[in-house]
Amino acid sequence: MSRPADILLDLVYPTRCVFCHGFIAPPGRPRICPACQAKLPRTEDGRRRKGDFFSECVSALYYEGDVREAIHRYKFGGVQVYAPVFGELVASLIYEQLEGEYDLISWVPLDRGRRRSRGYDQSELIARNAAARLRRELTPTLVKRRGVRPQSRTGEPEKRRANIADAYRVKDPAAVAGKRILLIDDIVTTGATLSECAKTLLLAGAEDVRCATLASTR
Image 1: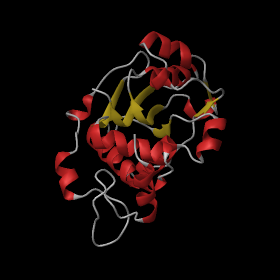
Image 2: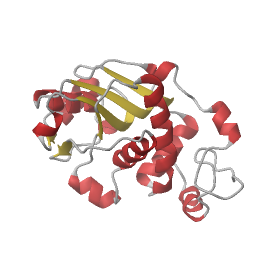
Image 3: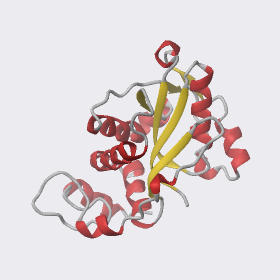
């Protein structure tokens, strides 16, 4: 878990490398240093996987080491300045792996209570930055209508599916009807959350759902 001192450094000195904390010159927006660019645990061909209801999911990085620590700082330490870097990684992945296979870009939303306590929706920020890099609009499609126990604490895949069942609703069915939707999230583990979101969208009339995440477990 990230140390409070590390989180403070990211806030005070936002030109440190997102992953290793090394200083980057000249000063500017947060980005990735050359050493980390060379050693990041990038997936092979997006680590394509299929889900119960989504056609496929691709991920930019493996969720381990410095990547895991950086995502923890971003999600739980208030380091929103990472969002453009993460969004750029996801945008590159989408361009390479899913170009031409979607009509609109959306994201997996937090419930209202968690968003209020965190101050932002981490997946929305990644999706917003990715969409901007791809010169596409971001479309809100889902609402999380109830809080659930964090999936990371739920255990086996069956329990994760039960935990997340019926947690989402479609914001505007007319906006998704007949559309191929690209759903963005921060991390995929078992795929239970993405499958539930995809099922909800398909039941509302979406033609297809594909997913892209910043990171994936191995």
